[in-house]
Image (tube, rainbow, N blue to C red):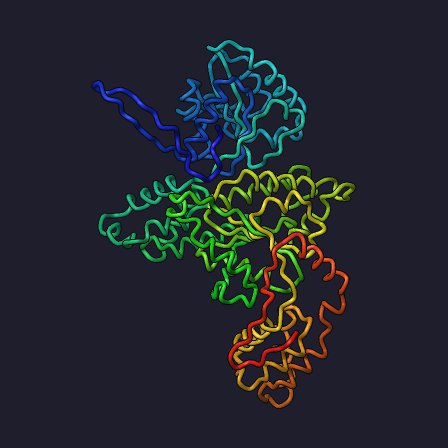
Length: 540
């Protein structure tokens, strides 16, 4: 069985006899070792072409060498600059042309695995070599065992040329898991002098440093540890996480977001939703696993724009103490066939390696707008939807998805069914508008005792949370221009009168959203209105 990328691979327990006693041994494989075991099985099954998707060339080569050794193959290497080589060094440096190495593979009588570094780029404009490779793939499975050969292609792209698709087995090489990151950490420490090593990893920082480095490639892990040592002479989890944010930003498949510092307390209203999230806060712990509790998969937030969907995604990451990764599926889509799926799979693989984490799929309805029949994007959105559905069905525990959407009608029912729960977020009630106004006044350093909260609430009936929060800075501009005076209730009410809320400009849209919320989701807002002690209750 193929291991899950980025997740430690546990083998089945084995039993054996020792001096008349039955002994049971449980071994644990790293993600890299599990991948090597997969490749070894494919080699023994005489698969002629294995397509390894990876950006870690050196690590992938070690994995293939381990697999080849296990399957009793001799590993050989080729690239367009160094020609043919083996583990000991160059064999035929002049064989830098693909047709030369393919002819060598064809005529070789050695049981060997050929690791090809640059072949996909060369094949794009070389139909002769492409034909030679295809012919090899047809004949290699029938060769005798003693001179069996297989080809392993290393490439960062999962896009297999159509003429080779029937022969190639595609494998995503997993990123280093916790065990492998721990080994890299030990290697970094062992290279230090004894006096520096004693203080390089303060007590309690080991697990934090490993967690901070998960989701990075082997080379990136080494780089972040080295950067931390250079800056502070210690392995500092904060610095490692900072380097990790920079690297993830460079890859452009996920965005690292800082969670909302106040957590769920910073979200006004939405009590039903917050209660559901609080109940699942500790569901990723070892105690929850021992209890037999399934790991939460995700929540879907649909409803009126500007009412707290994105804020909730940021808040839950802070409340659960997890990294927040934003997935913009629209930005990952490409007009080139296969590239969109490659980008999305790469994003998912990174999220799995970072787990536990919160993956925020923002405005997913816009990204999948063309997923229906007759879409004008050549099927790109449909392919992206298929990739997303497959991953959400099969993904390992640890990645909690928060998906937000304004237009639920654009989303297929099969996607909504992949979430643990669906919530509808409506316009804020009077009590929720009070919280939003107070939070906005506090954010901008205004004294709420100078404001008649009730009067302001009455003026914001039908406003979204975002529209209410925007009243404070808008009114402050007026007060500042009018002699830099203090903000007043009249300023806020005047700002509200100048605003055309979404409930008035797009009433049909909100009506349709409420119709879906009445039958397709749980209400995120509490229906009952509870006024605070110093605020007059309103009959709304």
